[in-house]
Image (cartoon, rainbow, N blue to C red):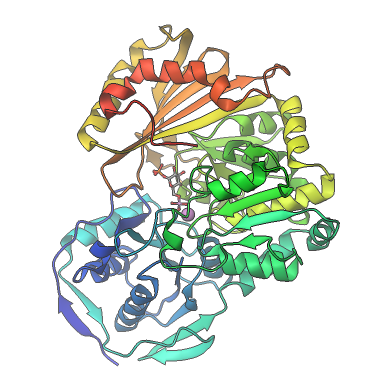
Length: 543
Ligand code: VG1
Ligand code: CO
């Protein structure tokens, strides 16, 4: 079957440096828009002639329609084969796993991650490389360039492909293999973790609550936690993926997963709670009566990963994104591990993982992962936590208390100002940039600035350099403020302010973060004049 060539015009594609395109769903549904971006991907990766690709998404509105279009375009452009999750579903980590284990040429993941879904909400498309990880800067730059010069794309005309039943079918010359989205992934988890130990923990009355937030992890959690680990009825909630995620933000943080937090703070709370995001790569961990910040979770996992079979031989090294708290660094120092600081975004971990320099890595935004795939992985983090709890026989609260007693505590919080006027946000960053040289030695709200710079990263593996990755201000006593503009928002600018302070005083480690960070918050405001620039007196979201 030969395709037809459709004449088209360039689009305003992804922002340079971001690993995928996120836009309002209606923009994607607009005439030729999705097609143009997919064609830009083909061009950016040097074509898909004879290629084998993976395709799937988080099930949000427009997911399956988009998958049908992409299949027709792949067929018209000469792809040999596409492996698709049933009903075009695949979590981001499961897609990463399939891309790797089936030795494919990469894959397309349909998701806007934790952003809400629906006709008036967000949609997204990203390309992952043959190593299973997000496309690096040079590839995304080529995709971006292609999106601005595009004048035609090829597509075959055909009926929709049956994606509801596993099996092999053809679209023209191209083979389509529809696979169970969960099977290979569940198998990988069984190899990494001690399922018997977790099963005994659960059989012994340890109660869990996993909130899939009506997003893609529903079927994964049902198969793994309920079927394979025999977690009792009620352990997995909001398990049915919905096109609009039930109207919520599938964002696992205390704001959007408030139901889970409430359940975990109640008198009859389960022992362990967790949630994941739209595409299944993020995680939130909560113990009975205790919320675990993602930065602390990463540090705890690094300190205890060797208790799980997949990490029995220890870790090669660890990494965190720059704004993530330095709790991880303390574990690394104590255990003699290399610890890398990378820019925000998972793609920077890929080279370190591929080169065997690190085993475990994570971000403050609720992403944790390891060398088992090349994406962050929500359920993986949940299972590693459960494996650790099963072995140590400690409660989450006791594990945290022991961790802080050993390493001290990095109190941490992130304040987001969303939908800010983009020019005003840029002005705030420019002003800070201009002040960097004169900040050290100055005192703000009683805290002395010890260092100030704009973060740039020289990749130790491929030598590439990423600049302008956020402004870091170090304060006396281990405090720190980081200012950064989001690269994933779809409306205006999102200003992120990351706040951190350190204590190893046993009397202080239990202080609530809001209280412990009050001084750093005041200093952050005085330094950057956030209120004046954002026009807000309060952040929209505190995590
Ligand atoms: C945010 C997070 C970042 C994460 C990115 C993608 O980016 O801060 O840590 O890697 O989302 O995560 P930004 O630029 O808005 O701060 V996901 O779960 O959307 O793939
Ligand atoms: Co995500």
